[in-house]
Image (cartoon, rainbow, N blue to C red; front, side, top):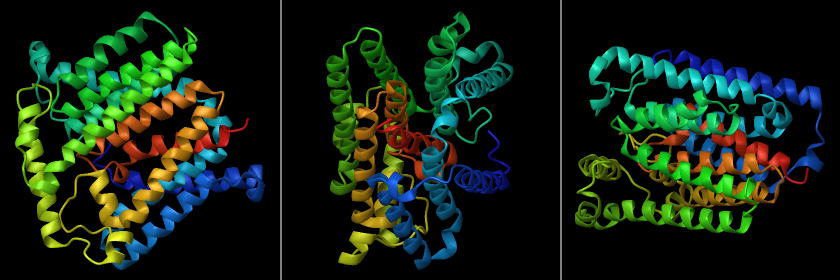
Amino acid sequence: MLYEWQWLDIAMVLLALCMLGYQYLLVRPDLKKEFRTADAVVVALAVLSTVSFLRDISAYQAYIKVMSAFLLYFMGRLYYDRVLECDDALALSSYLIVYINFIHRIVNFGSHFLQVKNAEGDFYFYDTDMAYAIVLAFIFIAMFARNSIFKYVTLFLVCPYMVICSDAGIQTILLAVIAVVLLMYVLEVALKKKKLAMAGLGLLILGLMMAVAFIYIPLLTDDTSGTWAIFGGNTVLDVANMESRYAQWQQVYAIRKPETILEIMFGLSFNTHLPLMSFYLKLLYTVGVAGALLVLVLMLQVFKAAYKGEDRKSFYITVMLAILMLGSGVTFNTMESLQMSWFMMLFAGMVISAEGR
């Protein structure tokens, strides 16, 4: 919510670096014993990102934000036990985010608050940022807050209202998907139906992957008629906004795009000259196919560790954070937003640390 004070981003990164150093000196972990494949993948991604940055250092802010996400991964590795003790703090901060923005909207729109179509970000810059924060709060309240009427009013009324009554169609869909994942969690933990829950979760993730692939097809074919035919009549997704995204992406690649084998494999730089609002396209532009494969390996390692671990809550939180980050990444570069990347990478590190415990 404090996006206007950009110095806070730098302060938070420095604080995270100090905390990582402090915890390392305090715990003195055996690096050879604790080192995992996922750690090597994160280090390789950091190296690839640094090489890409050195090709054009003008985009240093984007580089710092991406590197800070890797930093949070290692914080999750070292702070696993301590983060688990912060459930009340996560729940309280989530409630504050939801209700500060909710009250702000009531004050701004008065009796017309139910007719809002564009909330102008509330206390955030865009509705997308606000809706992402609300969905993130929804996850932490659902998983960490103590059961009460207030909790369920927040989950089933306030959070859906804040996201649905805004110009954030993708986050509205992701909120519904995450609600289904929560149902799978209840199915596994409360009803002991793990196989059924895993099958449902697998189908859900497969469906999301197919939807993401479909959205990017017009970028290759220059034909958006299929997108209009499927999504044009709905009231959630604004296909006109997607048309503008396709145009913006084409403009970026018209200025410069990877052409040689080395550029395709290892990317160009962080500087795309024009904003490239897509996690997937920015990933390929910056670190190439090699970087994309490393990200895929990291995801597989994290989900494998989360699935095998006994801490089912952390597994489902990781799945929901991944769905939120990767789903929002269709039209937003989520790795260059601290709010969008930090929690995902923190919990990724935590589930790697939890493996085998």
